[in-house]
Image 1 (cartoon, rainbow, N blue to C red):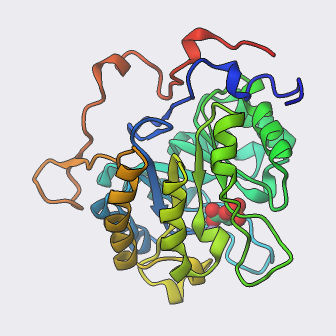
Image 2 (image 1 turned 90 degrees about the vertical axis):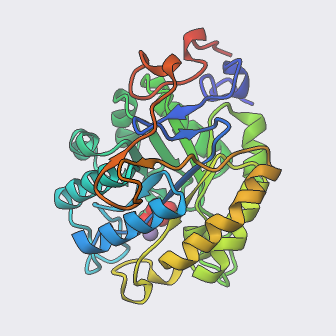
Length: 317
Ligand code: PEP
Ligand code: MN
């Protein structure tokens, strides 16, 4: 690898990086992370239904767009800060971390007030001012692979974030554009084991944007975990045919629950665990009285997000 991969390269750390959200969800540890929820936050009711369903099925992070990068300026653009508030509220009530996209460097501070993890979307993978801005923050970042980015370009985009001092970065493969339009994108599942060699950073797969077709999402999600992915990002909508964005690729709540049941033995086969379920105070999942499981005591004094190998410092190539 070229000298320019100083911070992301595998041998820059003794151990692979574990990114931990404030909520306790981890990426890169024994436990995989399951991020699920609607493409876009459309209303309180829609988000509540999705959040309750994904929490009950065993997800540990709620996804949902407040600022939507739409190809057409006439399409639903997201509800902005209102949606951020709804995400925080639903996440807290259901014991879920919150990941949401930030598109504009000027919004980073605002989104950080509500979210546990900032998503950099595929269209912004090489938005360098945005990468610098999230690099200057200390909130975990989910960096999606660019629409047609090479692995080298993707890792160098990650390098920007780490260079800013933010070591909590997770890579997300979401398919690349190909000659074939049979699926929305072409999922490059080979990057999962490849990145395990090249970088210490965790890698998750988003089969929803890769496939574009809901019924193809579960088998590809299963394959991703079998290949060693550290987690999944999956679009779930209570009423996919009426979704304001990405309905065709969104699982309904029942299909997501079925996928979670299918994933359990596959995670075990891959030597991993599904997220631990949060414990409801009154024993009824999905009610407003969620109490997150206590974090392990050795993390008690660590900042909101911690990188397992950070105490060793960074060895430059
Ligand atoms: C999304 O997660 O809804 C999204 C817009 O993803 P991507 O940037 O991968 O297209
Ligand atoms: Mn989407």
